[in-house]
Amino acid sequence: MIRLNDVLTISRVGLCLLTRKVPKFPLVAAFEVTDRCTLKCKHCYWWRDKQGRELNDSEFFAKVTEIKKIYPTLIAAVWLGGEPLLRTELVDKCRKIFTYNEIITNGTLPLPLWKN
Image (cartoon, rainbow, N blue to C red; front, side):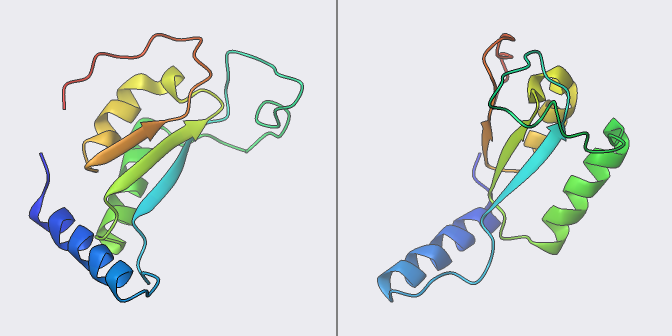
């Protein structure tokens, strides 16, 4: 379901496009869910570069919520990392904060059957 705030944001973007101005507010955020992966592709840097300590689910959700509060114009999120579907429950919980979501996956894990 589209939220009123999202409709207003989309309207602002449309106005910017009509007046040929670049929007000065963020619309999309990308979140690195994990650095763990089910593959070790030669071309990929995720599994080679250790990112440090991974946030637990409650810490990660708190950060996503904080970012959404700071930038209420965010209407979309991209979930990526090594393999974000290794933390399916977390992505499911966080995706509900945004109207539009995209998951960058390597396709080795089945896609969850989430309801919108």
